[in-house]
Length: 160
Image (cartoon, rainbow, N blue to C red; front, side, top):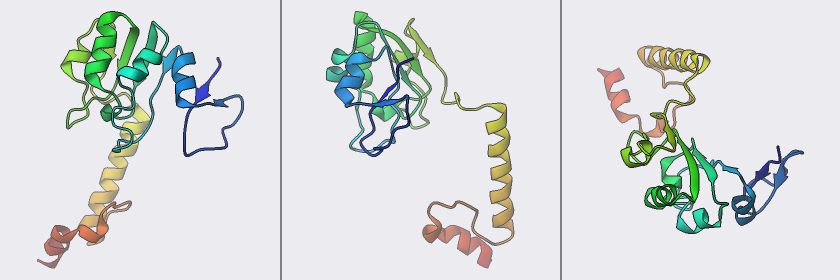
């Protein structure tokens, strides 16, 4: 398999993976995986122009964030036949589930944002939840807190 990667933030790509520009990747790929965080810069990363630059019959698989795809453009590409298949584990809904319009298309395989939920991952998530609850019961901030400086309600609960 010949693997092309476009990442504006990573320069050193290990062989045999080849670094390429986004347009080169889109034009050459048989399967496209947009993998990026949801930011204003990546919103609709895959839109009408990007889909048009892909080979006819290409498979698009989004397991990253729903905001990366313009769902109207993707649906149009599916309906026209330009997009051969679509795989989704994410969508633009608040819970990141794929939209019904895309999920019900006959050339779409969609999962409700649980594609990474392997037995091992489920066990790790459960253990992490227990670890975080135990920390709060002990009166300490949970490990890996993202917004610890804003845990005001938790502080108030401890002070009761």
